[in-house]
Structure formats: C-alpha cells, structure tokens
Image (cartoon, rainbow, N blue to C red; front, side, top):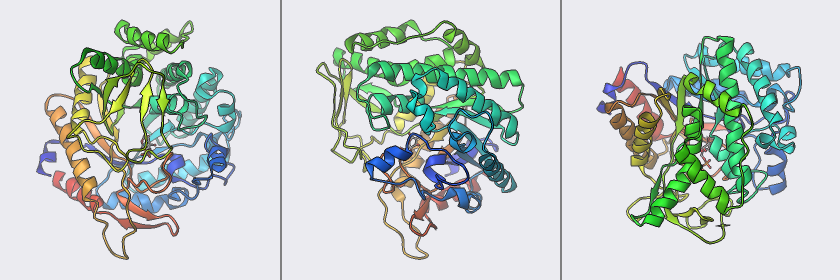
Length: 470
Ligand code: BG6
C-alpha cells in the first residue's frame, strides 16, 4: 500500500456505476423504455428491477463511498429518464429533478460525479429506428447532450459514450446485446464510426458552448497479443487489434484513421464481404474534436491471445460466458485462445495486469492528443454467497486483482504516463447485462431481495489505501 504514496494528492479513487445496472425503478417517473426492457422480458432470464435500487438508495451508497475512502463516483444519466423516447422537444421534468437530486447529494457528501451520457442504454424508439446505424440517432444524441450540459451545470466532468466497441461488437458481431446479430461486420464497423462521429460532434459542441468543465469518452481496451510468433498469428492479432482498439483510438485521438489501421480494416471487410461508409464532413468533425478531448477514460479487464482462423465465423457463446462454454472464431481474423500460465476468472476472462501497463504505454506513445487518463473501470466479477449478519465478505481474490492492476498503473505512471484516477468496477453489486445478478463486482455486497448492503474486505482495503495517501 505504501507505493500509492507516490500518487498526487488529488488522485481520483472512485466507484463506477451505470444507470441501467444500478438504478432499477425502470417504470417510474415518466421513464421511457431502453433497448433492454422488452428484450430482457422476452428472454425471461433477468429483470432490470430492482437492480441495486440506486434510484432510491443513492444517499446510502454515496455515504458508503465516502466512508471507505472514495472521493468520486462514475454514474450515467439514463437518456430515457430525460427524453423517454429520445426524440422529444421537452424533457421529462421528473427525470431532470432526479438527477439534480443525485448530483446535489454527491456534492453534499464530497463525492465528485463523473457522468456519462450513454452507457449501453439507447431509447427503445431510437433502437427500433436503427440505433447508431441510423445517422439521425446522432442528431437526437447531440440534442440530449446539449440539454444536459446546459441543465446540469453542477457536473464538471463528462463522458459522452461508454465503450463504443462493446456496443458495436456485442450488438452486431458477438450478438449478446440486442438486436443479437452475429458477424454482421458491416454494422459492426459502421456503428463504431457513427458512434465516433456522434462523440466528436458532442465534444465540439461542448467546446463551442465554452462550458467550464471537462469532457472525454470511454473506450475499453483489450490489448491483443498473438498466441505465438507464427507470422499468421502475428497478422491475425494485428487485424483483431485494428477492429477492437485501433480504429476507435485513431478516430478519437488522431481525428482520422491511419493508413495502417485502414489496411487492416479493409482486409477484414474484404474477407467478410462488408463495407464502411464515411460521409462527407465526417472526418472534419473527427479532426476538430481530436485535440479537444480533455481526458480519456480507459476501461480495462483483460487481454486476448489470438490465433489465426480462416474458416467461417462461429460463436458458441451461450449467453453467460461461463468457463469453458464459449468459443469465438472470426473469419479471416482469428480466434481468442487461452495461454498456459495465464490465470482466468470464473467467467474465463484472462487475468493479465501486464495488458493494462502495455495499453497505457501504447496510448501515451501513439496518441499525443490523449492527455490525462483515468482508469474508468477495472475489477473482478465473482460468484459470491451472501455473508452472515455482521460478517465481512472475504473477497481476497478481488483485492489481489485490483492490487496487481494498480501496480501496473503505478509502473506506467513512473514511466511518464499521466494517469490521474482509478474507478473500480463496481461500487456496489449490480445487474450485469449478460449475466444478471450472479456476477458480482462490488466493494459492497447487495442482497438484492432486501437491498441490504454488506461490506466486503475490498472496501476495507480501499479505505486503507486512501488513508495511506493522507
Ligand atoms: C463493461 C461495462 O463492459 O464491463 C459495464 O461498461 C459492464 O457496464 C462491465 O458491467 C462488466 O461486464 P460484465 O459482462 O461482466 O457485467
């Protein structure tokens, strides 16, 4: 713990949340449906209610944040609480009032809110009209963003969109988010581009409005390594990296797609009979925004080891991602394989802190426009049993995971990478999109039936960390 003494006093320690995963109360106070409501109902596996009942219990969760050493929180605004269909001219005042209450409570308790405008929860109406694939969607998103900027002046730190790749990939390639399309490569790349343009439009607007806060976006980085030195595997890793990371990083921080990136993207498109449309003016918008991002939110969970794969695409993902149940092969690109000696989580995710260090170094080296970095998500999902009354849940594995990743951050910082904060995913146990309620990430355990909060050992560990810095 002593190592964190090298961090600046203002370093951000935060807990991360997302509206749909914590709030619950999806049918109250004029809220509209997101793309998940009918989809989850039809699946019949999980309900987004009550989630962590954050809609009502935010004062308690903020008090816990404070008590256990956190000074910040990541929340997202549910677009559908403000504009229930995404398209209205007038906002839903009850939704607006809710977020004013939430932000006031944050500030009253001394917890700085970092706010995303979009965290996987597109309004159902816009989703039906094509979501990010429909360029009109961006017009509505920009209007919603402008409303929020002018209304919520108490917020000083904004993120436009959370994990652009996860949306594009999970919606159209892997198919575990609605509309469940598999290997629709045209949509998978087009969604990435359209989201980037939407992000850039919002950044440009924010800067034109001359608002006193800061703005950026969040990418999850999954560094890609070839499984060995075979040339075809090295090439496969390059292609996969272009699709998963580099296209978005270039678009965000260079303001254009480099020739090297486009060479890989075009190879994937050719092999999959897919195409990308870049409209006139798009690149000007990206170029204007690139130097204007005030910060970068990097989410990091795991890396991938890639082996070349030439056959037809297949995906045996069974919806839960449990160990040993999913295999994923992307035509002409590759398949993610396990590497001996690299430990994995209960959900078969690699535990590879080196990947975080490498990603920080890479972004700092390749993208001078990327100034300050916050780790906006990092954490470990576990199956955990309810603790007994007054028992502290011993989540040593989570502490180890977080500790190793903070170590990677410190190492990158020592070498000049400007990381200014760390948000653990997640603050409290939450609803997980594809896994429901049994994949727990929180520093605080929630008995979802009673909504009682229990302390985990990782919360105590965070407290010690914060105290060490004093
Ligand atoms: C990130 C998302 O992709 O990973 C979160 O921003 C999500 O919303 C988190 O919950 C963990 O993913 P999962 O599938 O384990 O819940």
